[in-house]
Image 1 (spheres, helix red, strand yellow):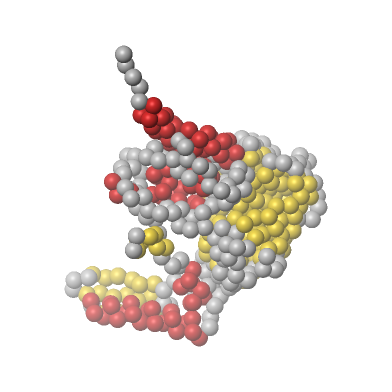
Image 2 (spheres, rainbow, N blue to C red):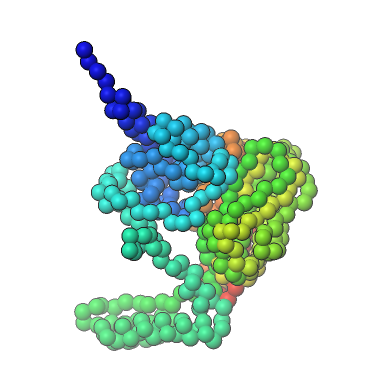
Length: 422
């Protein structure tokens, strides 16, 4: 008579649940156009591509925060995937982290640990090798290199101290060049060197004061009628930086939309675009030169009663003010575009784009834009992206979609001296 080991059967069931969940994650990525894990990590800005790769490997069940970021990067429905994750977690006997629930973005405030077997995992053909993107292992923990905005802040505002730092950096580079060859010429911050072993090269100092993107600091979606949402800050905000609030409200009406935070920063509307009568709105609010926020702070958003809410807050650096903006709406069957802004006034600016799309296929951004995580409720979606420009001009937030849309573009002027217009 044959016997079955109950423990072995339970283990097999747990492994099957994890494997099935990983297979579904891989299929979601295929349906999203099979973006590289490095591109997915770059779009989120809060997790390494190694962690995303392991989430789909089936070696273990990923946490819900990791799963949520993976789903956001692929444009999946967060509510549906949360239900799948809960079912897989129960089957695999993995408890859900306390305080995590569907419809509220609660990403981990710390950096994800490097998987111990990351070096031994093999990515799919044509994909990036798993490595810690933008991070370095230090004493068994993941250490994040200081963001480049720290250097930009030192050299960007025109103070004597900041220009001394820039001069010091250039002097160090020139010294290294002299050690290898001969300095030939300098012109507008460019140092050209040559040497018998090194050949010829050019070292160019960065344009001071150029605006830049930092991170997504909070987001949420809602599926029930509400008039307010309080978002926890999941990424510390440096004093002097700028916050951009992007919102898509469905089944709503005209009325005041506001934002406040626990540090008393002031948020001002920059764009407010309604559709052609279906009761949806896409909005952008900004807070310039904010007081610092920590992960203990919150951002409160108020709006007219709305059936669905898509809410995202992103951090920019080296911004002085909103320079130009444009907004427009269009019918299904047309690609979204905000229309061109009036001509910008500074040589180096950051153009932030927002598109609220009322269903259909996932929206994609035009060439030159860096896509940020899309927030989806049912088939409605809030797509955000940005691009930096180095010349004055008229810029639009544009991309592809196949349903009714509302789009906005906001151009941010630099806080310090910008590069001369090209």
